[in-house]
Image (cartoon, rainbow, N blue to C red; front, side, top):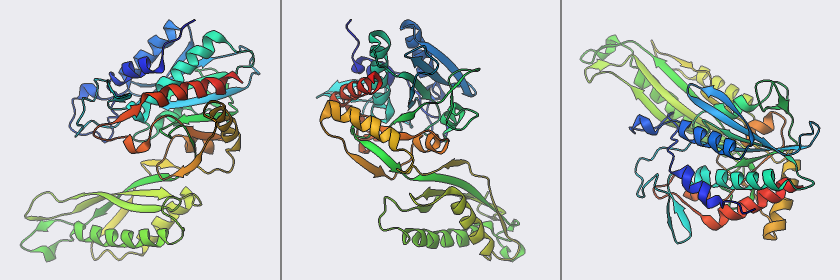
Length: 395
């Protein structure tokens, strides 16, 4: 039987806008959300007679979970996880949804992050479904939503019991390990930073700007917090020998004030805290709370720290050896060698690992091409990734 190339699936996926609406700019709302991709995936599964489950996560935003392999309930299983959403298209210099092919590259939003990986997984899944290798694993392909904003898709995938995932409304399954799709140049990413984000709301009292002494300027209080955050960043960096493994904290957004002649009564800051390889999220939260309690904001001013709007732990090599061993073996069988590395950016892998599922990050493409104005991916890597995944699933 002749199977469709991964390139074909990639072209179709890139032509389907799936911009994450969280944090997106002034883009046509018709381009927002993953529904077009989810519908396409559902129809793809139906056409291949592959078992699937549509899992609602957010309004009109669903995970799509497919299962192939032995019917034996005791068969060993792998989880392949890939996100459906992309970032915004603002500033792009290539047509974002044309899927133009030139010089062995495919251009468009999501080509690298991460529809190239999705196409590779689909191509491998199709072969495994029809060829049914004798020692094949059960493969669960989970196409999740909201990875580019608050990770709610992968959180919904996790089962009630540690180490389990939901494969439908009534059944949970415990995979031996997970392969999480992100651009890794066909090597393995075995460690990465985590992230926590909070809002800090500073409250004061408003008055006319001609008599500022009658009010309490919330922006001045926010400025004191911003200054202390800069110092905290330096303190965090000094605890680690290099920038990749180190934690960090950044003030990324600030807003306040309502008019040029009113002393502002409110100011809001957004903090992005990256969790280093040897840090934990609880320590980072307690550290920030302690520092905020020590800052003298000034008379009439107070601040409030929100609950985390996003919380994702770091991925550490320890505990994920099963995933690394299996995937690196498959990579070496196809390419001859396999590299492992640690990166600064976060992925869904750490959420799964925290849930007790050994996880590793793997996929075609280079992260330096993700989210760019001319996003592209080498098609040869997409096809190679499909071969590696087929080898991985064949047992």
